[in-house]
Length: 145
Figure 1 (tube, rainbow, N blue to C red):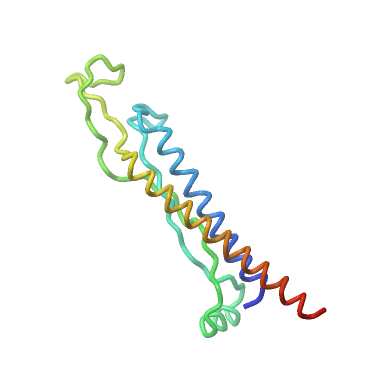
Figure 2: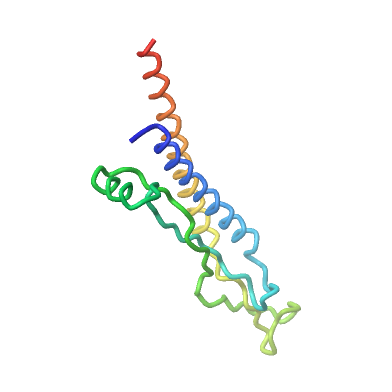
């Protein structure tokens, strides 16, 4: 594995975690949004990650599988949570139905905070991997002097 492959692998992980953090932030900001443009309450959004080989042609892919070369992480899709909204009794709310219930987003703030902490730790791990790769190259260059 060369230096650029390591950088590419870690940077793709950083990008994927950034998207995940943005989605979590959006979920937290919309915990009380009862009406969206699509109608109904806000639906929690989640990123689906996928890996793909960092190579372009078949021969490179085969060599990567044999030598366990790095992969790149990408956001394959952004999906909406399929859980039903939470019904809250609030007859004075403008979005209440005829029985007085308001459909609220099914977003658990604690769950979102745990997800944000996990994304943050993954982001930090990728930063550390980038830094370690950079330091290894610097040391290798110093040996060559």
